[in-house]
Length: 63
Picture 1 (cartoon, rainbow, N blue to C red):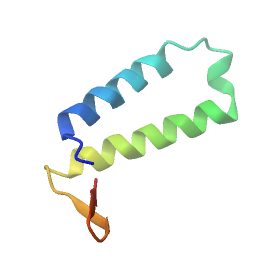
Picture 2: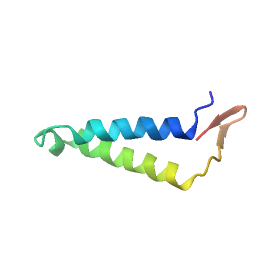
Picture 3: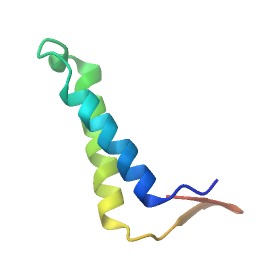
């Protein structure tokens, strides 16, 4: 499965918008904090990579 970097950035942007739109009461939950951390980690990973693919399994490219 070949996913382009721009599509991933668009998807992460949509997720960021969704998380930012949540009410303040929900932002204090453990799941929300974990989602924020995971999203930040993915954004950082995509910012560092410049179109390079890292192979995690033989024959299956992944970011």
